[in-house]
Amino acid sequence: EAQVTQNPRYLITVTGKKLTVTCSQNMNHEYMSWYRQDPGLGLRQIYYSMNVEVTDKGDVPEGYKVSRKEKRNFPLILESPSPNQTSLYFCASSDRGRGYGYTFGSGTRLTVV
Amino acid sequence: GIQVEQSPPDLILQEGANSTLRCNFSDSVNNLQWFHQNPWGQLINLFYIPSGTKQNGRLSATTVATERYSLLYISSSQTTDSGVYFCASRGQRGTGFQKLVFGTGTRLLVSP
Image (tube, rainbow over all chains, first blue to last red; front, side, top):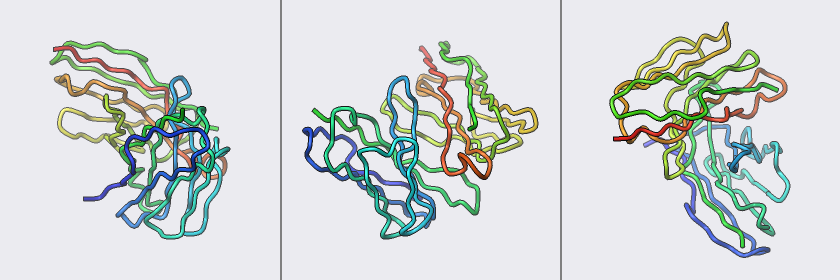
C-alpha cells in the first residue's frame, strides 16, 4: 500500500531533550515536506526537500532541523524542544512530475512540557 | 502568495442530508486538493482536482480553475463524515510553488 509513515503517533517530552520524528514514504516520491498544525494558525510548512540532499526552509523553520540522506526518509529533528513546539506534525510527499497531489502521514501529536 | 478561503466555516447536518462546501482561491492554482481531517487528526486525501469533476462514492468535487473556485459535494451524509474539510493548493511557479497553502477549513458535524 502506498503510504507515508510517521513515528511516533504521540509523544510527550520535556523541554530541551532532543527528539526525532521519523517519516518514510514507499512511493519513490522526490518531494517531501513537514507541516505543523496549530489551533487558529492552520497548517504551516516547516521544511521541504526537493530530492536527496536538497532541503530548504518553509515558513516556520526555527527550532527544527531536517535531513534527506535517502529518498524515502525525511526525519524532523528538534535539537532542544520548547513548549511552543507543542503541535500536531504532518509529513507529506509528492511526485512532482505526475501531479497526483500530496500524500500525508497520519500525524504526530507532540507535547513538550 | 496565494490565499484560500473556505465556506461555510461550520456546518451541522442531520444524517442523510446533502451539503456543498466551497473553496475560493485568489490566484491561478495547480495541485488543488480536498482533505478530510477526521476526529483523530488524520488528514485523508479525498480528491486531487486541479480542474474538472471527479466522483468517489458519496463524494464528488468540481474545480472551475478559470473562475478560481472548487466545490465539494457530500451526499447522504453519515456520522463518519464528521470532521474538518480542507482545500489546499500550491501556487504557480515562483513564490509559493513548493508548499501547499491550506484554507481555514469547514468543520462538519453530522448528527444521527
